[in-house]
Image 1: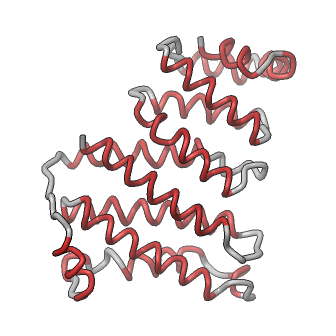
Image 2: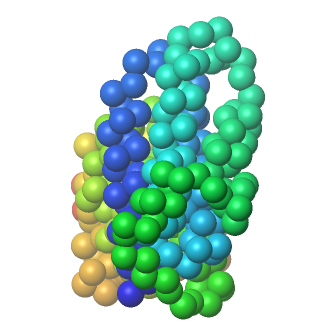
Length: 248
């Protein structure tokens, strides 16, 4: 229950964040890196506040506050010379200072009033359980959204989040899927249209429980020793056939 709720909230947070940043007027080669930093920062704020408060509602308030500060910071440096030279860690630190650094000593009246008006459903869970959930979330964010591919826009990433993020994390073997997907990305550049087909095929196969467990030895063989075969099959097979050849 707690796991699925965390994933649902993270997906909602990311969807809102991508919607706001995709319409940003910032013109910079660094915008993609800045947005990725924002994603990781917001996830970290949510994770830390959840550890401290044991409340999804309160943690949601903190992460939305962090989002507001991030977007405000971004707006202030829009199209300035500082945009190209700033240290991204300064931006990250600014958000942490405004949200979770003083979390246990927060006296912000507005925040407290907001917390009091929500149903404060505190939870009981193992710290290790929470750690594992966020570890999987971060891995999925890193791989599924294909940040290194400039064919994938922030609007595209928003769609990937809406359609596939929660579904992928719902699989017990989601980390194995991400691992395979990561290797595919390292060898093949996809257009967004083709990448969506790839993700859908992998998910459909896994839903039918037809995806085999791929060992490290098989990964090395398939993606490195037989790299030429991999590239050739990607060229001559349909994406559906290619995925079936790879994971079934």
